[in-house]
Structure formats: structure tokens, C-alpha cells
Amino acid sequence: MKELIERWVDSGDIQIVEREVDPRFECAAVIARAQRESDRPILFRNIKGSALPVASNLFGSRQRLSEYLGAGDGHFCQRWATLMKNPVAPPTVVPESDGEFRSASLDELPQLTYFEKDAAPYITSGIFLANQPDTGVPNLSYHRGMHISNDEVRVRLGTSHDLNRYQAAAEANGSALDAAILIGPPPEVAMAAASPIPPDESELDLVSRLIGGSLKMRPCRHVALDVPYDTEIVIEGRILPNVRRPEGPFGEFLGYYVPQGDNHVLEVLGVTIRESATYHALVCGSPEDQRLLELALCNRVFAHLDGTLRGILDVSCVPNLLNTVVKIDKHYDGHARQVILGAFGVHHDFVKSVMVVDADVDLNDLSDVYWAFLTRGRADDRVIIVPDVPGFYYGERKEHWGRIGFDCTMAMDRRADFERKQIPGIDDIDLRDYVV
Image (cartoon, rainbow, N blue to C red; front, side):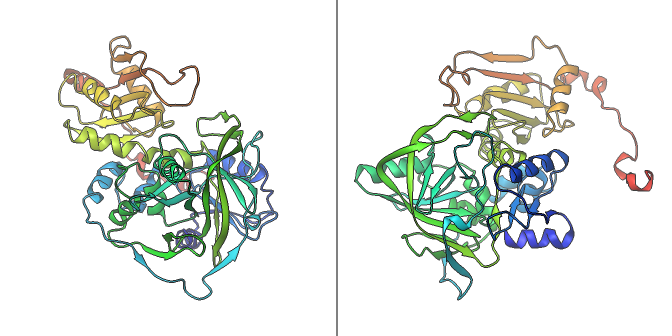
């Protein structure tokens, strides 16, 4: 992350805030307002109460994620699938260089409170690293952390996450689970942590495939774990067995507050900070959050559909994880309906709605997607509704039950009728040459 920020500063591709900013609401407000205007990352150099600068919106655009992977525009999922064929190289564990990391306390970190009713400052970009107690397989996954004191962070472990199973296995033996929270790791680590894989595989193997080689790691100081070497901040601790304490409320990614509940407790044993470190702030539900969450689903949907159907070009999730948009090269009438039905079975939590579009539609622009649905055919015979199917585990009244699919494609014999109008030369126009 450090090298990325330095590169953006040199190129002018990052917005810089020099004035002092309050970590309670003001920082989040500036980030959210900046995201309305631009998808550029933003750097705060003066956060009240902390010596650490804060960066946000590092993953706020699909174009930037594609650049991290070396993918061309519109080929993110195809590039990801290609990288997954790379061989896995085991991590390279090396000792710390003298003076590169220092010990710190949680209070030294920016105490960011994001939303009005959040119960406390939260760590939102934290990636938890832990090993399966029986097999030793490492896991990387995102979980929110409520900052209680220098010694305690309360953690929400989703029931569908591998880390929840790891903790349960340790707890069954009466043991704590060693864990490290990574803040600001290399981008490949951040993307791998957002990408679900089979429970007997490790996200660290996924990182190896993404970088095309071995990941450099270092031993933790307080727990028996190795962490990615180039991580800005590492919080070391252990998730306590048979201990649950009140956590929340917190403003989650769907745009609502999750109420207070009894959740897991991480006992903090130590914090290490890289020299000249930057703290990564992630506003839950923001474009940056949605793009990372999208990784959890779009590549999985693409791999499944591409393995069973022809013409799968790309997959996205806009405006959020509950809506999957699939771009296809349509081969026959009924093709889109097959894609819809195929996508429904990929993930039982998140594939609530599926929209299938032609190759000339921007699948990252929901306005363009819905325009295609409204203009390329009847509304009453291009929708598939599947009632009473369980969905995302949030919602006591089954708000996320059911499935709906939209065929936004044109009929095979109507392609000439739906040729999109074009203005020649529009992509070559620089408004600065015209507007004063």
C-alpha cells in the first residue's frame, strides 16, 4: 500500500487533505463526499489525535482493481480466471529488518467513527489472518472490529465465514485462537481476503497466484503466525473461547445499522507499525467497500457460468452485492434465461437478483443496464421470479428471500433494430480544449 500511495502522490492521482480532520464523523464525511465527485483515492495527512496519515478509496473503482491485476478494461473476470491457473509458490518467511517496524498501542491508531449511531470507533479495513487449529491452513477474511481499549477489540464473525469455524474448533478444545489483524497489506492480499475459496485451501495460495510468485512474510512478535511483510499495521492477539460481549450498533454495507449483539472478543497482545505507515480507512457501503465485496462474488459467478455456458464475457455487482450483472455474447434466444438460472445457484446468500445484458452495455452502470431492459423488449415476459428461496442471513422477516432475474438482452432477430447510436469522435474530446 505504501508504494501505491507514493506513486499516486508523484503522479497527482490522489486527492490530498492537509488540514486537520476530526476522526469522529468528519473524516468519513469527507471520504463519502469525495466519492460522490470522483473515484480517486484520498489521503489525509493530519488526523486529530493520531500521528498516522489516513488513506481511503484505494479500491474504489473497478478500473483500479483491473490495473492491479494487469487486466484490460472490461476483462477483469477473464484476467482473474487466467491468474488462477498460475502455480502456487509457498510464502517466503524472513525476519524483520532493523528499524522497519516499531511496537505501538491501539490508541496510536486513528480512532475513526463513521456513522452517527456507531457504538465506538471501528476498524473496518482489518483483514484477519488465522490458522485452522487442526490442519494449520491459513485464512484471510474481513471482519469489523469495535475498539474498546488497548487490550480489547470486539469482533463480528459472520456465520458463513471460515474464521467462525476456526474459532469454533479452537473453542471446542477450550483454546483461544491466535489471530492477526492486517491493516494496509499489499493490494493482492486485500483482494484475496475478499474472495471466498474452498475451506481446505488458503487465501495465501490465491495471493501467490495473483502476484505470480512467493509472498514475502515475517513472523509475528506475540502469536505463532506469519503475516505479509509489507503490511502497514498488524494487530496481534487471540480470540477468546467462551467469551461474548456487546458489540454494535454499527452502520453496515447494506446502508442500515446492525443492532447491538453479543459477539467475539479479541484480546490484543501487541501492535506493530511499519516505518512511515499509513492507516487504511474503509467506509462500509461505500464504492470502495462494494468493489471489494464484489470480488467475493463476481469471479465465482464468472467461473461457474463460463464452465457451463458459452459467451460469458464479464460479471459485476452493482449497486451492491445482492445484484449480479452478467454481460454475454448472446448466441441464441433463451441464452439469457439459462444464465439467470445458472447464476441463482452460485451463492445462496448474495445472488438475490440477476440481470443479463448484451456485449454493448456497460455492466458497471446500472442506468445503462436498466435502459437495456426497458428498451429492448417487453417487461412482462423477460422477468423470472422464484419465490420463497432463503437468502442472505440478515433480516428476521425474510427480507432477502426470493430471487428475481431480468433478461435485458435483445432478441436475436432484432439486432439491427437495437444498434446503439454513436457520436463520432466523442472519446477524443478533451473539454479543456473547449470550455473556459
